[in-house]
View 1 (cartoon, helix red, strand yellow):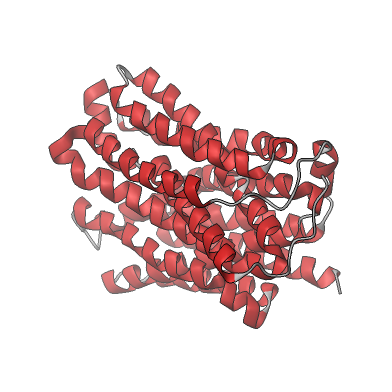
View 2: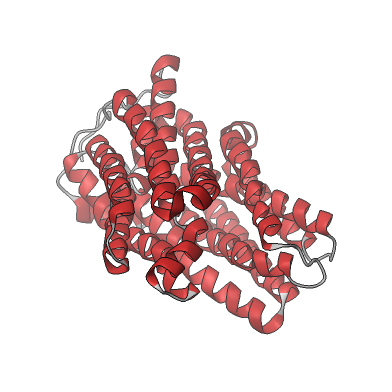
Length: 393
């Protein structure tokens, strides 16, 4: 892939335009991805499903995203990053608008699988696009803003569908979320500049390059292990909060997702941390903070559990922002799409595996053993990152 030299740091107006466009795309994409989660009981009732069957409305989309992200990221090396992002946000919104009209559950699952594939176009390509537009100097802050948009989208999708489901039903609530996503998608279409790179013709060599760097492999490990830890904790959070000794009503327990607001702040602030302390110190501190927050939730106190989730959420999203930006900055010019795809693949693979393993450990051994497991995963990610950074000296 041939490139023109990206400026060390894009001019302020252009940088703002890129950041706004990508953040809007993140809000649109992740609002759509997680919108069905709050209405799973309504889906179960409408289509006569048990909770596990209804949950496929979420897992089919995330699974399709994980499987398709690397091929789409590789394709972006051939046809260009901007085209892939625009196709992603437009097609995912159109599919979201079609969801309320699904006549049966298999059709709804088919639409959700297609939507996951569509969202993979943004999730696997955005960081590479930012690296090309802004260069290494500007990518850390922009990736942080992108991940902040992702967290806002994930929270907005859950809240917009959850708050409107009682009076609009599941079709209307998903339609509301799709309408909000449409506004964000239009903002992306109007403001997303062209990439500074021209399409290339050697995607396989780019894939080899994306797998040949210890530093890049370390960032994939952070994505895998940290996301696995994060999802494991949130999958079991409802059981922890509604069970003894806390015994919260389910509606109150669901407010734990408001901790995502801290993730919005810390991911957006990650670029400043990198500029001041460097990448390895920033990701190390963020992972340690995540461990400390998780450990705090062991205490059988509602205040400690709530504060612990706020702290671990902030730490996780800071680590994710630093690692994602680090991978984008380290990616060879001809392998940026593949690096973004591999990072996203590891991220969602961690979500799938970590969520399942964590729930199993919690069910058999309890919350304290789950915390021990995720602490081990997070510290392993820290060790891999430090060793990779040390090997370059």
